[in-house]
Length: 279
Image (cartoon, rainbow, N blue to C red; front, side):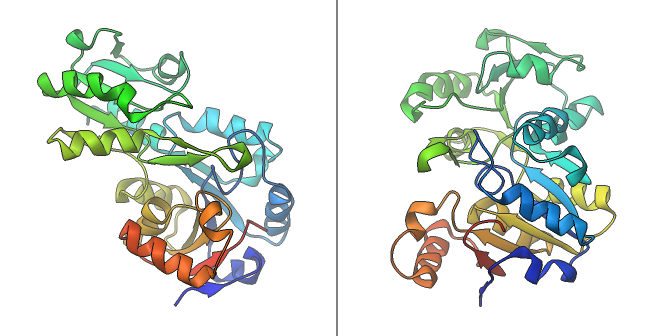
């Protein structure tokens, strides 16, 4: 049974650290949610360790900088772990054999910045690529825009490395945008080979456990499929933030019934706790 809480401070002492998602929890992609930074400062002042676990195709350092630019002091977080960081490390240590990638990115230049220290080639020609690097999608894009790319990649039996398994992400004004996981899922359903990095897949949770030196952790996120399901699989407790990805769903009607419906639709487990917004 999911317990309703009014603030993280009610349960913070039960855990060695609190792990936070970015979009939909800390910020909407443009600005921090009101009161969020103050709430985290209060937790830190009480001795709570904080970390970020994000399905971002970018590496940890630029994500830490982005969070800081939104008003979260750099000293708040013991660790920032991203799916893009995990993929970068596996290319560095030779776990991934391919060296010629066709990049799909949210903003032009993101992939080159991410790969600046890697001995790989980013090519705009899919015919010369050994694999596809799927790290972001431009806001406002549609699935149909990418169908020709997916068909061509499938015809060449290319593997897709998806460093952001999210299917949708919240933006300012209560809007949501398409995210790379939606594209990767279509490719998988068509028989394509996809390697996912990030939540809900266990390796990124294991990496953060190792970095923090504990598994007595609480995941705070706004996605049942990624944050909550991943936390449950890792053996962590979890908090669902209602005001993020599912804000429209929770805006009317009974919250318990809404949660039950969403859990059934997403085939995802219930969170340990639910909270309207981070405070």
